[in-house]
Amino acid sequence: MSASDKVSMQTEEVLRVELEFFRQEHRDLDQAIVALSNTATADRLMIQRLKKKKLQLKDKITRLEDRLTPDIIA
Image (tube, rainbow, N blue to C red; front, side):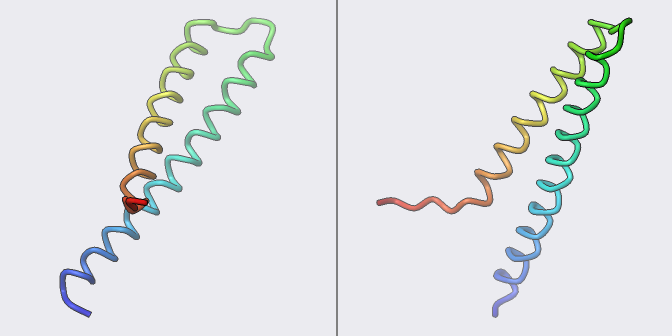
């Protein structure tokens, strides 16, 4: 195994860890949004901010998944 392959594998591992971290944060935000929405005094501005952050995380997750998925020309 060459040094370049080893670095590539380490980079892929780092990306997979980041991906899982962002997925967990996305799930946590979803739960927070549901919990806030179910309260009688729901703060609509806070819910909108959390939804925006959740969408930004979704974009990050998609970009990481694209980097980890090899391009295969059929």
